[in-house]
View (cartoon, rainbow, N blue to C red):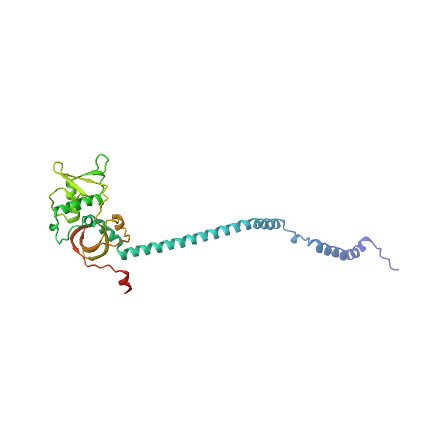
Length: 289
């Protein structure tokens, strides 16, 4: 008779293992579904999560800063564009003004107006050679040249309006106008309105720097160049127009027109002749016709 095998714990262990295994697998599935896999390879990366949270926080904080920067740079760009437009407009106006002055010879006209001013004031008679000019006219022009175009502070006396001008300065001024070969016989010149008294003992002229009487002031009508010689048409503005106003080109009707011939050499001007001019101003009626 065969022996009956004892149901020992060892014999029962496989059965229990097989029975418990499905339950364990089912439990693990439930845990995995609820909390995720707990396997060693799939442990949660806490450091990565913290880094991601920190990056998100920094992104949230930096977003307003980025907006401020964008607004700043946008405003700065608008400012630069506006300044560039202003600079462009100013440059265009400057170039246009310079071009107009070049076309109109404004600078050259003003130079000649200042140079011949003393001659126009004296309204000297026409001449072809300097020797034709009377000494009285040359002296008067020379003193007016000092009064109008020179610093008279060195000739002042006692702080008054009176001036004492040495003979030497008058001769030098005359050479500035009419050339280095001009000669003078010094004497008292002028009229009742404007008189320059010559003192033979001191070799000086007495003048007054507060001169209000002017016969004419120049208005440069045109300038024609031929090498170093310039032909200048000059309008004689009446005494009611201030001298400076004539130079600055304020509108006034000249009483007559004269033709001046001026030589310019090495930056120095010399008056060569003065003639009557047949220049006729263009009126509105003639322009319309």
